[in-house]
Image 1 (spheres, one colour):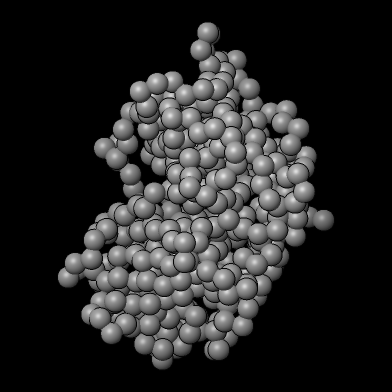
Image 2: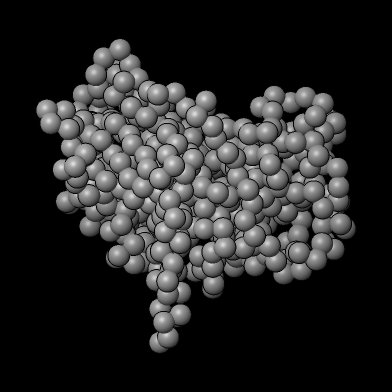
Length: 159
Length: 237
């Protein structure tokens, strides 16, 4: 039998002491080679979550950012993510109140491309939209909110 | 029950559920809909790779980050990081954060009326060596009160964050101290169904690494999920 992995515990409310923003093969600053993804995280009462950390795992690039007092985050990601219909980044989210992270994914293609993605066939049609980043009016800017619970709850995957 | 089922149960019970009523913050933050199986859920995604250039020597010694010595009981925390096949994981980034000896975090939202220590930040990072070993020097954190329930106190703990080979081995956990009477009352520690798994979060006192006239040694070994793991849960919690 394999060894049992060590148990997960919450990051708690004070993780920013130890989990500083972290980028790898990704730029911390926006440029013409990056896209900027921004949004908010909401709890089951639709209150913003001011103590969450998001990690974007996409190919060789990695970005870790935290939410602010108003629940908002902003991450600078590789522009190549925006270049194909299936382009996506896996996302891990940690926060006070999560004893283990949730795993989700954000797609940058259009709705039909994401809806028809065979990998997502287990996702109920009405929930597909929770995985889709919105193209913002400004170039290379996208919006994506995360809802932990409720009717508009973001799709979370087994992890 | 077959051996396979026993193993699956041991694995499942080693991790806390998302929803744990006794830990009040989970009630509005745990996913309420079933988690969804993704075709590539079990595929590992390569994670960030960290070089020694990103770590400064004082990052591993939390008692040497300021001009003076922090107050408190000096400790040396060592351990090994393994994958679930028992192989050492080298080059793993470990980040830790903790309260000071009085139980106060250097964080603007910590209102516990215990003193801050000007000589203690409470943040450290190291990479595991070729044999998966790591070492931190610090001070023993104090217990601190929280608002979860009447007269709630967290047992002394150090937060650990680890990056292994990929996304599946990503782990954030907490290391506790042996003999802490608060463990029995702590909903975060007790959120883990398996007693065996819970107890593995308690470090052991270690004479071998205890330094005469200087610091007490504690040992904390960690097992990360490997790249071809079974999922942590096969049914909705």
